Image 1 (cartoon, one colour):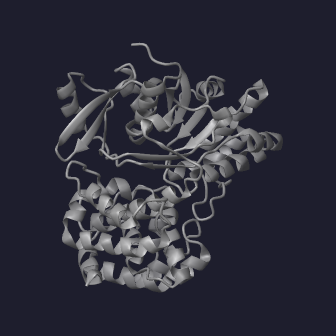
Image 2 (cartoon, rainbow, N blue to C red):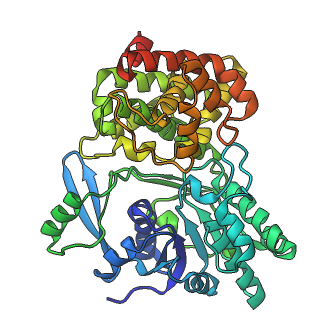
Image 3 (cartoon, rainbow, N blue to C red):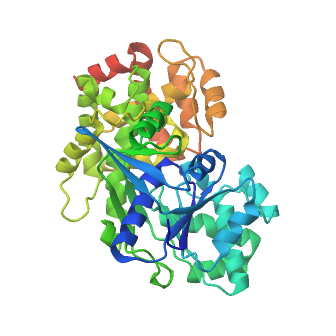
Length: 465
């Protein structure tokens, strides 16, 4: 099979980007041509590379609709590199002038920033390593060192395209890259600031984790054993600020992406209405024993809870032109309830310390400032606190996946009473700005009392009235 030449390097080649960005790029080239093949980079593990290599980098993209599955083969990948095995090879790929875009899905924690302030965390061990070693470890380190190589060779910078669920993700990534570049070479930082481009984006497609049972079932249907299939819902939306170095990009509009001047309205709506409720449902649903979001919203107590959340969230959202927020909420509920999407609550619950500020706390701060209710939102925050305490309602140990898990567990278990636990967790400055922590003390403590005393389901039932 003849594939187009590579024009994109993608850092963090997980299931989401293969179910989302790769599909858009494949559709863009099918519509308008162009050399926009993708070199994927795994920043941690060789597992994805090894699974894809056995299929010559192709994989099955599986749409999970209520009426059944639809399988499509995606052939946009040209190679997959594993950064810890050979970081120099990754830098060489990024420094190649044929590469016009370096995109990222590294999750919130991959930005090595302080979630409460957005600033680069210079004390992060990966950043400490990248300040002294030209072969980087972190995603910001790879970006800065590759841009340094491009500048030294007289090549223009690549466009840096964040595809992570962060508010103003392009602006945040630009600030993180410039902070690190200034520590390494102030002249490099000036060059990137002047010539680089960091468009913000809004990405939306629910992508549950692929299980071995999924791999086996898809292999039986396609006749191709193994591989690295990805599963996703039918819905997909990508809004992108149309600001690329020299205008070089695939024809993403032909693939259905929305090319806009400012993505902030799309981003705020999605982060607050989808991601915010997803997180609140994940923590409360997990505590109540629900394995998936579909099972959670099938419970009428949780269905009522998510609608109460939207009632608090929507006044703090400015919709994109032509969007009805009530209709958007109805569509979200239908997506959550899709029985074919087994999106596990534990998967969404991961990395909450990094997610809470943009998913819930921004809405809460706006509502408090405007004198609006935060009662349901406070239950979401309290449920996160109950979750990171490390023990569920049945007394079983929770496998908390979070970069601050050990620290949060120690803080919580050091306190005996619920009020003291809440106060201690609100004092974690990496998550809660000081003023907001003070404002949250009363509503979150009240919510936490109900959760610890009644359990998640009964606490929500009481809250719903």
